[in-house]
Length: 497
Image 1 (spheres, helix red, strand yellow):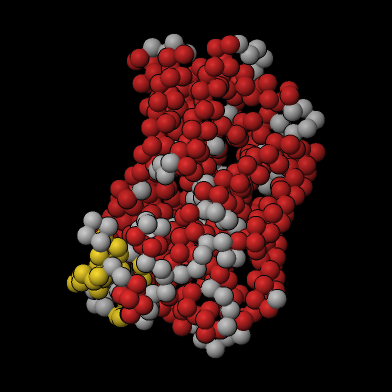
Image 2: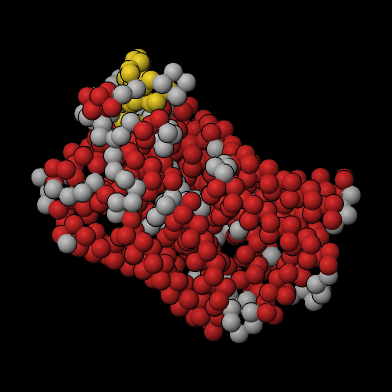
């Protein structure tokens, strides 16, 4: 009997899109009214189904709408997205998504995700140029020799640094850039590609899950809940430290097992194919020259400049993409690559990541179906009513699971915050706990599910190495269960202590 292969990432997402389209025929359509601050006219715009209303930008207006958020959070730009208005949910005319909408959803998703898609393609172009110069070969060889016998330092360093980026400024989509670079380094250290994937993806996930000063989750969610972002910060710092420690130990144990016996790898059957994919980057005997060092320095500066720009100057995908484009040109000049050859290599490098870009677009298409079918708010409404009359411990853990479930449909942390927090955070008042616990449950629920969320970044990340989603689940599920138990314990104790 022929063995059935697990479907590709693209097929998984298309199946999810089809199921989402079916949901729009089953789940009633509904909408919350929203309010947006208009900076130009210093006014609020209240948007109901099919009509808008201009309101005075005053604290009294917010109080009348039962929005317990200080006015300055809107006027100083902390909250820039539409905020859901509590107690305004209403069912609207159904807009079920049929075959035509399902077929068009990946196209719409690709258009909506154009910013991150272009970032991925330009990163591919840069990697192509770097490979052509041969600088990767030399740099990886040097690093492998330097770390010989101490390769575990690489795991600790990469996971910690990326987790630090995740907790401070939401390093997530940007990590797509690191896979083609770090995977060959881990292979040279005699680990498998899963170790590299884990260090990058798990590092990012635990970092964003336990966000401390991340403006795209901790701060915007606290603002939308009407509390200071420092409230609950101590718990999140402790969670980050212990959570990161658990993740690093988990990866180290797996990495040691694989290094001692490669057949223990969950992707052992792909070992040869993956090494062939990166063969030009491994076992180079060339020596470091001034030209090679300069190329590697420019390459490293691309990422340093990107991190500084995102964390300090509010850069986004346009600026990040420009950094990698300029970096590729500078490296091409240093490497004395002819214009025709440069263009050819850059385009080919971008093409190597085209499959990843399409996966990102299809995943965004699922959100498009949800929005067009108008069932996101309905899911939120039913989730908020499900917590009535619960005790503290049950309530906060229910919030954890609710946010995990909602993140399947709304994988954006900032989008989730402004859509749900004005509705969910007041529920804490009735239970008798602080709103910061709801903010923490939102972060932990979204963050935990992000480890396996197919509508998030994991499928795009796996596609870079052509590792199946089933193999990732086999690797990561024990860690997810450990973190889930730990998180539930922390949340339960925190509401009673």
